[in-house]
Length: 125
Image (cartoon, rainbow, N blue to C red; front, side, top):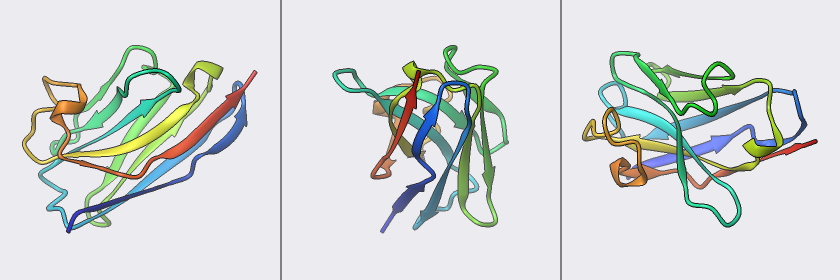
């Protein structure tokens, strides 16, 4: 079955950096869109970034220029490098897989076929 396992979350002061990793299994991966979503307390889960099978990347405006998504198709891993972190980036971050290639135009949870268990990122001011 499909499994997405995140790691790399934690606590960091504002302005700091973290790198999230997601290891995938049970997926073709190289032809899938892989992404990251986040959910803050009391808020809906929101799109953060995605990487298509061509390597093209997409970001929500709030993280553009600060976060970088990358992938290693050979290892079936996707990463999210987060720089210049702000307190408003505090959330549970979820790795997401879209096997139907919808996330290019639909950057909502409905485009996701599989989710990881989530990893907490806390940014203190």
